[in-house]
Length: 279
Ligand SMILES: C[S@@+](CC[C@H](N)C(=O)[O-])C[C@H]1O[C@@H](n2cnc3c(N)ncnc32)[C@H](O)[C@@H]1O
Image (cartoon, rainbow, N blue to C red; front, side, top):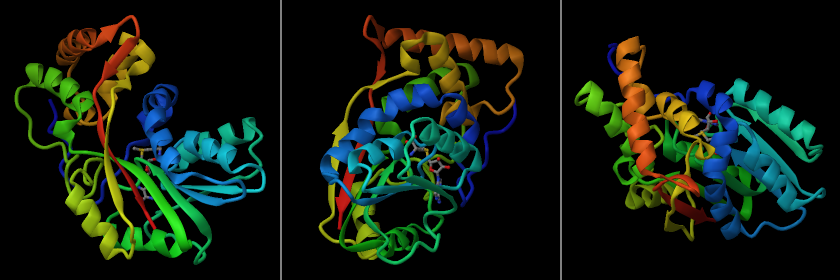
């Protein structure tokens, strides 16, 4: 068994699982994006930036919301995910969508270029969070709205702790996966920290609401749910090149946990997020 990936100051989202499991991840995360959109009250004709747009499901949903007179720009560091996003937008004939490959926390957007900055789980990865959020603020027109969703801590998210614990049953206690470092998916897990960052970046009227709801895992399919967990944080990071024998045992352990969450309605596991808005 290889060691877990060591914590790094510059967290990289592995695009592989996000591309491979895009339909399952979009089905799982759709309600979180909708919770942000519901608070942003998008209007026809607005110019929107989708931060860490990934494979672009939210980018096209935002384009629908602002209509043909509006525009949506998706920005992401991953060329592989943007390739999927571009293909999806093109297949849907979304002519008001464009994509930029780059670091949203440092990309030189034109000042006041956007009315709205949106993100579904894409704002936790800035190497320098205050500078990154300040870069987004400069891209907003005066009075423009920021809205994003981010995870609470890893321990508060049953959809991450349940599969991790299933792997730990086989592997034994593990060192940190790096997921909760200052840069990473759970780095905005504490309300006070989010407020401090956004205030330091110059945002006002910051509202940070807890949003807890079960998420659909693997589109309700046990095999897809097992594969998803084998490749996603935090379980995926515990399993760097596991040997075949261990992998089979981990899969069995994951299946047991998944079955506990399965009903006729699908496989649902708890999640805890913050829905954040500011100006
Ligand atoms: C957890 S995924 C979410 C993807 C997408 N928003 C969704 O909900 O399906 C995080 C995304 O943020 C992107 N990302 C990470 N750091 C970034 C940065 N500094 N600038 C832009 N995108 C970034 C990753 O490549 C990845 O696509």
